[in-house]
Image 1 (cartoon, rainbow, N blue to C red):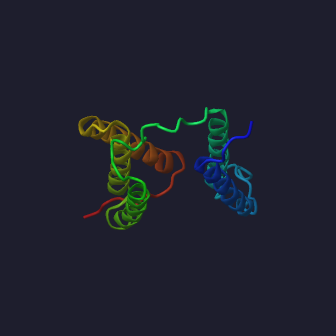
Image 2 (tube, rainbow, N blue to C red):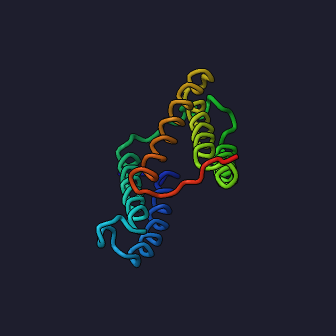
Image 3 (cartoon, rainbow, N blue to C red):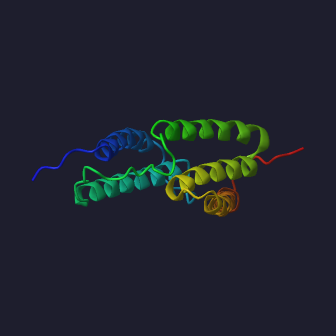
Length: 164
């Protein structure tokens, strides 16, 4: 039985190709922990590994899932016409994150960005503003604090803060 190649499968293969090109460049960097410290290649190697695992998960899910029924309700019923607006909103929020990070520092930029992205995805999934705001606040706080602890406390890196 042959399966139809879905957009998810094509996305996984494009992601696989791009990640492989990126990983080939990372391999030219000094190996992490060669000198006892994580080094500049640690995060890129970790991210490449996670992307490979994500691609594998997408492919497994797509090939194990049953063929969709022709009359399936749209997954985007909570937010109509989200097709192109969602990716454009995510790109705009990333650009805004970079600008806010430069002027207001890590905590403000990370908190705003993670709140906005989380609100967007939670509302898309649930269609409930109240529940989405609560989950967005919790997600934003957790990711912002974890990111600060990870970079500043664990690795001793400097993250700019909002200074008046």
